[in-house]
Image 1 (cartoon, one colour):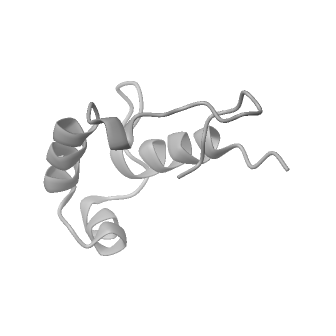
Image 2 (cartoon, rainbow, N blue to C red):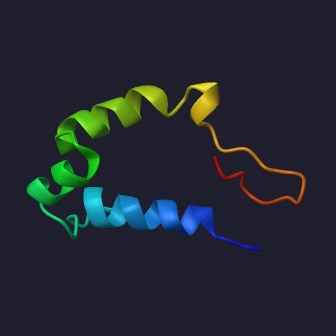
Length: 68
């Protein structure tokens, strides 16, 4: 079953953090309530962890992006 994990990830980024220069759909308060951290801290964590092997996207046996 195709769950389109990548599209879901893009929707979270777009709605809570903005996308391609556009402002986020939800404000800082809503974002903090969802992630239980201020948006600035979540962005710093993402920037530091995105290149680590555990967080890299990989392709599964079917040739689709692996869901974690």
